[in-house]
Length: 273
Image (cartoon, rainbow, N blue to C red; front, side, top):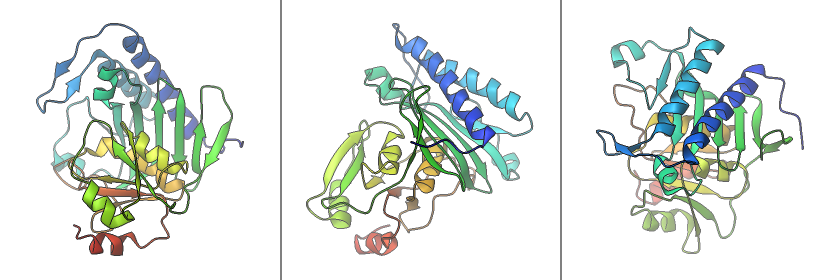
């Protein structure tokens, strides 16, 4: 066990995520309605309650920094293209898992600087696990509220490797994973950004995402994984970056724990991108 670095902003954002998690759990414990957004993704009162808490909290911490959030209207690219530093937020990542009541959803808050996540917190409200990281300060895990902080790190590629996979977004990744990892890899299905955190604490090796995700889905957990020693790469082997253009949709990507491996070569050999 270790003490979290003396980085007040990281502590403040962690506490803000916990307040958002409390708002989510207030809804989770009751009956709730589910609406469908224009993209056919679900929306609940918990998404909106967490958004309200986070928006107010970030405005208090630094009223000058702009915010991109899943549950807020997005400014046009003409304005966003000038941003060097901003918050990127998913108040409730894994709403489908929330609706299923399986506990595999998170609060994601990231600070982006020049296209790179430099601070990230990921909270799992049901278990109270909190993952926190900041550039140059390492990645940390608090197993529940008020517990001691533990510094976490990724592992060397296991034999057989473990691939974290999506709980609600299946797909045809199995053949690609076999080409990347070999025939004997194991699959661990998990919802939301917890897949990145599983790799960050050395319990899985890769997460291959085929199909769309939004920038707010990945940024906070990417910071955690990178500070734990891993990487998040597009399928050309380049680090995933943010605020790239009009669209807030990520390219397909591979999150890895063992950054010593030449994943670019493996991706190429596997026929990707």
